[in-house]
Image (cartoon, rainbow, N blue to C red; front, side, top):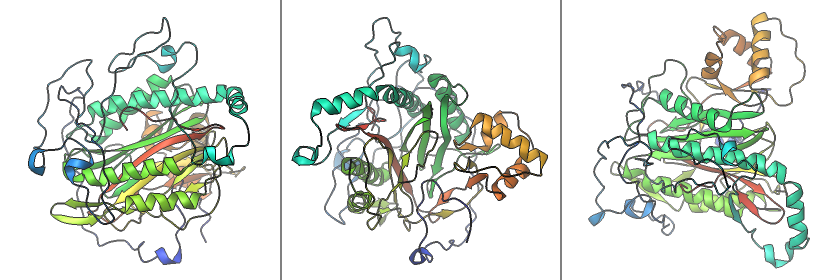
Length: 476
């Protein structure tokens, strides 16, 4: 058996899954290439989100009622035309994104945020009190399960308020970064440019400071049949296209308190029902989560919602499937996967959620097999959390480990970030660190070629009195 650690958002493979794990026939697709496009805001009105109404089991959600603006007679709207540049006005070509309200700080004397954002989030809240996320009551909260009075619960929350404010700062940073990214994500942009602009904005707004604050993990921008763990390596010329289904998954942290949040970028309305299915499934997982909730019950509820959707793509009908070996996870300080996994299919463990825990509730819906395997060139790596001292013979490996410890420690990183730090010819040393078990490689996770996978994710906090969807924004 392999001694490698488990992929941080993947469930272990069972014997029953072995057949699905077989690689599909090679069809040799070339990388898309394109010219770099200037990142400018569009004047066009943002697509209305619309209520994503679920049909009965096995019924299709039509394009007009899923995500985006309904169209007369049910016809798909025409391909969006390039819009004029307009400084200071937010708009997006991404479907399924609700419009953002202008940011306003309620603190006296605080500066007003610009657009694109230029002012660090901490400067917008001089008191150190950051906006709350969306608060939701626990299921059955008023049915005898509460152990203390409301006043006692609020007092417990007040004691933990310092920790809460750290992660709320990270959450506010995430919201403002993704608002910016939604305005520049449009067909024709190089994926490398999109990631670099996102990460530069993230560093600026969170005021990156060593391991005290910064980016929590590499920007995932997996396309189409690639579900997770893909970010461009140096020299990659992949371009975001009108027919792309791109999962933007990035994280921020303050003091190791991580916000993990993701959404799907798409422009073609034929993908609206797929995206609607995953959005509703994620919100179902959030609704079912809570103190003492069983993880297996959450997975069953998510799968029921996800697989009640169908989607027509290029004239063919597909049932949306939950990707059964991907899941949500608990989050700890400087630890993106703290040990508990939240399944998105039925049949998981009966382990219960506990008060004070932080969870990434994420779901993946696919038109393929609903099962992912490792494929393509690796870009994501992470130092194993519990690794002890391991002697290294290769001097270059020792030097690289020092760089990793100083800049990332147990947070995930990618090859682009090593390039940014000035590291050169490090692949042999990186492979050595992986071979001895100090670092874990996380290759892209892929369904079958030709399929499409969508993702939505939020970070939630299980407070004594209620759950807080920390990363919730106006957009989704």
